Length: 304
Image 1 (spheres, helix red, strand yellow):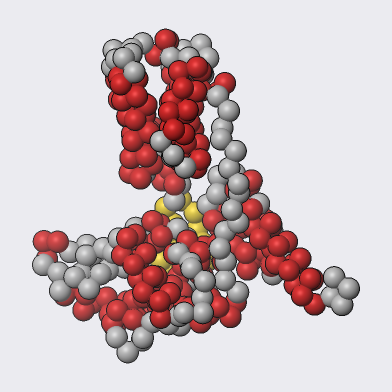
Image 2 (image 1 turned 90 degrees about the vertical axis):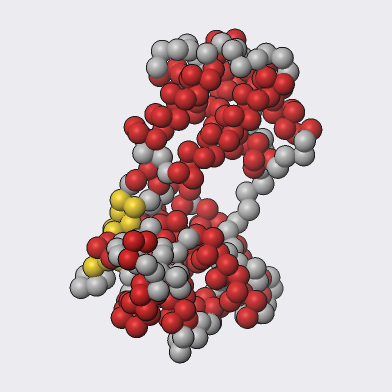
C-alpha cells in the first residue's frame, strides 16, 4: 500500500542516499500532501501504487494550481513524485514511472543576485571588530565569500575541518559528499581573530553539558549557530548598508562563483568548489557574467 512504500522510500533516502534532514523534510512534506490529496478525493490511504497513473498526478498538479501555489513549489513536488516512483521502479514494484509522463511547469530562470567587488568588500567590512559578535560576523562573511560554501555547510563546520597551514577546509555538502575548498589570507585572519578572541568567551557562556566543543561558529550563548541566525545577521548588515540591493547569505556564494568566472576560472573547477553534482547547475554563472558584459558594453561603447 502507498503508506508503506512512502515509509520505505524515506528510509532509503535516509540510510542509503544519506539525504540531509532538510531534503528528507521536503520529500516527506510533498509526498504526504499527495497522499492527503488522494484521501480527500476518495481514493483513500489504502490505494495501490499500481493504480496511480499520470492522469491522477496531473489532476493533483491542477489542484495545486487552483490553490495558487507557486510554479517552483509545484515543480518541486512533481520532482519528489518522480523520484519516489523511480524508486518503486528500481525496486520492481512498478514497471514504469507515471510521473515521467507529466510535464514540468515552465519556470522563468532567475539569475542569481551578485555583488561587485567593491560592494562585497564594503558589505564584508560592516561588522564592528571592537565587539565579539562583530569578530564572529566578520569571520562568517569573509568565509562565505572566500569559499562559496552554503550556509548549511558553514554552520556544520567543526574545528578539525579547517587546516590553517594549507588554508583549506573540508566541507560536507549534500548527500554527505565531502570536498576540499581553499580560502585566502583575509578569511584566515578574520577566522583566527574570532577563534582566539571571541569564541572562547561564547563557549564560556554555555553550561558544560550543552557545549559543542568542536563547532566552529557559535552564538553568544555558546551553542552552534543556526542557518536562521546567519540569515538574520546578514539582514542586519543589509539595513546598515542602505545602498546595497537586497541580498541573502546565498548571494555571497553566487558572488564567489561569478567573480571566479570573471577572472578566468575554469567552469569545471568552479563546479568542484561549489559542490554541484551537475555542470548545468554551475553554467548559470556564465549567463550572469554575459549579462554584466553586455551591460558594460552598452554603457561604454559610443555606438552601442
